Length: 106
Ligand SMILES: [Zn+2]
Ligand SMILES: [Zn+2]
Image (cartoon, rainbow, N blue to C red; front, side, top):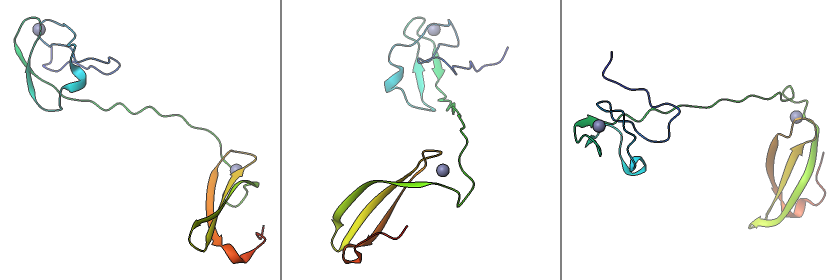
């Protein structure tokens, strides 16, 4: 038996003494001591950050099929912004060009 309870996957902290979920978890802070709402025994809250990963395929560098999604005229003085989105993988990029440059070179 260890002194820590893994709260990963629960949205509320759980008292290590009695197992009761604490209602005010959202206003509790990492590394601080609290008294249980139920049994009133003290515990320290450790906030575990549980990253969630997901992956998707993207194009090889330089192999994107860019398509213009949006153009922003004079977004900053003298510059237009063009937003591109890759037709194949959905990758997004934007580029600033001089407003006077006229047509965009592909
Ligand atoms: Zn308790
Ligand atoms: Zn792509």
